[in-house]
Length: 167
Image (spheres, rainbow, N blue to C red):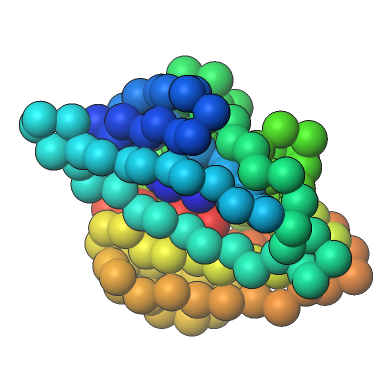
């Protein structure tokens, strides 16, 4: 799951498919049984994250596929001091496993309860600043994990300074 923070990322694959991802764009991809795929920075460069998920054994040989999600297509939740962008792939296009990414920006003193579906394994990567996440203090470059729970829940985030995190 490439997530572009800044710049431009160009991708191609063995089927002839081609696309360009800009800041705030995400690609949901399943390598599955094999894909020849390249991701290269545009001439101005790129700053991106590459998130890898380990599929269950029964899905490892599935057909390769991907789907781009552009920033302007993300669902946006704006509240006082908070902007949360939701990117989802419900297993029908790019990913064979349901996955949601939430890009949360917090202004100083802001609080946000991120919705977490029941039985979801959750991680938080702090991109900028420092945030209190589910009772743990995390700073830029640190990751927090949460095991699945049986009911729909919310993951509380707050920050004494400006912060940004990817859930």
